[in-house]
Image (cartoon, rainbow, N blue to C red):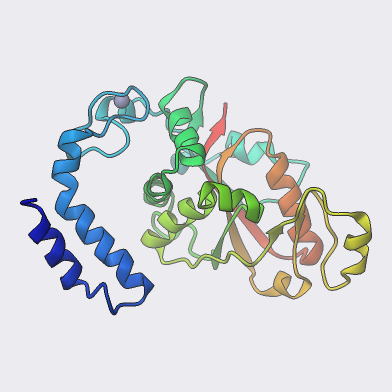
Length: 261
Ligand SMILES: [Zn+2]
């Protein structure tokens, strides 16, 4: 009961009763901030990898697990990286960057799993910021006009509550101010009939489950596709082929949290 005045003031301060929906979000945030110390006392935050109780300055991962990340070091590599080489002979790519190497049982795997299935959108934003901090040094990446998160089908997005690639892109965008375009290309329904496909003439050619509006293809000269993890590169290959079919001259870069080693 002693916390009720605080709750009441939080609500009043944010004009919850008269504000539009974004104000509700602000009100909810202020309530969360007010009660966070109490909440943490009852339900202490734990590391998503080793389950150890987190210190107040740690988020999602404890310090020990975070220093165990296997960084690729691609930002310092002058010769083509293994990620560059993954796309050789498949699709033309301007530049690629993955922050970490993915290994089974590693903290990186826990991060990717929790981002995808653990409903932790903020984790994607944190990792996106780390990508930007590592990659966007000096003039690198200056010609990139827009970030394109790898699209997910809207049903999958509805179930998860967000697209994890979009959250990573948001983290990159917050540091670089490069805008995000979620309408550039779509993930089509896997079960879409061939009949329906041929009837929609305004859509470009369909390949690998992605489709693009023809007029979208010439909006940009240099885009960066943002993904969570790259294993075989098959998804990105299909995506890039679709984009290049509409506009063969477009430059495409790739950013990901991790690549399989
Ligand atoms: Zn840990």
